Image (tube, rainbow, N blue to C red; front, side):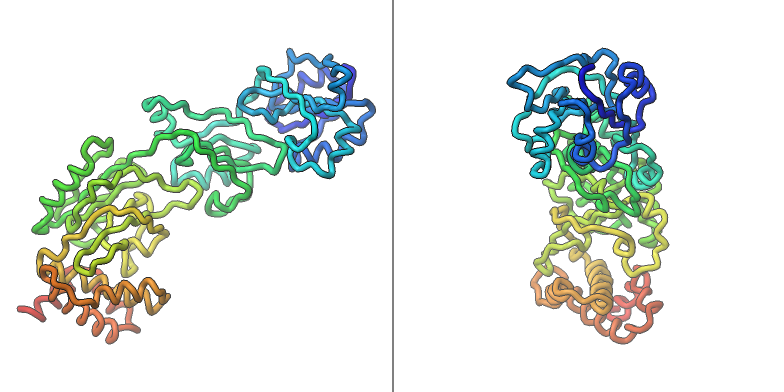
Length: 445
């Protein structure tokens, strides 16, 4: 071999390293740090030859031709040998003097004035591939020892084959720039994650590259929860219609007393890591897809969608379909005024349903009272413009069915919170239907 050699060792393959030691016993072997650009900047000036080879332990070089000599008109070019999937390449022949002359202006390989790309087939060593669940990804990254691991969501990986998409495997990152976190598909279910001291979520890492390769969504169970409300059968039929043709499994929780117990019963019968909770008082929007994908870059959480309330003519998260994290539901102690909001959650501006709570006087009063108490308590702790706006909406007069019960509930909730604003134990009574029902009976019966 006519030129010096820099061999970047990612400590991924002893076999590849031994091949280089045998074929090039004088190669300078260094561990990967930061980027190829920084490595070349620090080492090219020490080369004893006009050109220097730069190679990577990611590749098996047992059959590679290192006797290549550039033609006279190609001597000032960087020669890059690459696979079709990664044009930036990990195998290069660098013209030392020309590189040093341009190096201060270079940020990326492509910034070099003259590059000669040689398309070939190089045998790459695959990065480890590991399946993950939404709840375990952080723990897996925390224990990661390798520079990169290709994580894939188990069901997505096999759904790709079913839907005639190729799952992305053995992706080859570029090491010419800072090490990135790669989201390889549009749903972020296939990830190339570098080793880093993660605390709670992958959003902590920067920089990231978000690719838009075709993907398939995941399909979580749907659990319909009812306590024989007058409209439950009609709304169950609306759910069946909206979910028709979708692969989600539909299950039912009926007659479980207590909201905390009902949510846990729904989690118990779900066979998926998340599940959609659909409540008897809402009519599922026919355009709701039941195909939302939790953000793998975030820590596990619940996802609250939008619901239209015709009584107050407003759309927000109250009574909406919720995509619950099953594990979090089972761990929830139910000690907050709102079961869902007491844990990590996101509000997703997708219309999921229209509420029909107003069709029954008792349900109308009960629903409005509980919601007003929660809104008033939240405004006291952390006031927001949106919170005030929603409260004003509940206060507005309406000619909808049973709207007077809603208005009465508003008045009673305001008095209740004013009286017990410093007594959370008393406020927490609004969490249970039986207590609110007793207020209804006292007022009207």
